[in-house]
Length: 289
Image (cartoon, rainbow, N blue to C red; front, side):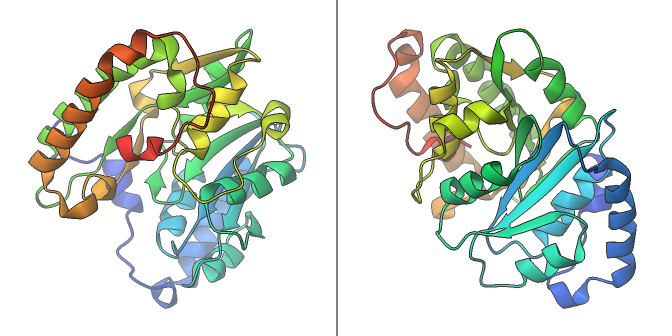
């Protein structure tokens, strides 16, 4: 974890383009060269990304994944979830498998993607995130252990004006501590689609909720619990990096975002020790990001 600065490797991939038209062909060529190195016809792992209006973010995300260091071929599927910008144009220029899902929502998009996935394992990624080169390796180290059916990783926030890294670092340490309590009985509250992996056949058997609401990732994790173990990938070097826009919802500044999260966790803290599984959907888990 970085205490004062964003990682250098993220800075290199955080291209400052604002529109698809500004992206030079030479950059696509460079990224595709890296993609050709890591992808193959018989992938062990499928990385599944749902994208909605992410014409620049998806470029950054795929560029980071293209740096992956892994000893088996992977597949990258990007599902355009009915975007209204040039997301599809960006996808078409990259050496990835592009799909289109008209029905709005991460659930429908991810369901379409996992049905088409060729890999034995699926890793979920978000279009607005950056992935370290060791991410696939570290996730797979845990996912391939005996009786493990699903894993989730940790994440950090990139600093922006009003959200300095040292404050975000404190928030992340608190978040990591809470996740340890959740892991005891309610790991599905830790399972976010920005860094999550599972056995593809089991994921297909359960299926993502075919609706547009936050929590399709946690719901899938909940369903997987009856088939095996859910484990946390605690490797800090494999942390995914994302912007603080989830903290900024409702116009929140850092202090407001922190207070909101502390209040929410205090209200449900003791529920983390209740081993009874819920009977209905786990909704809106993404609000905890």
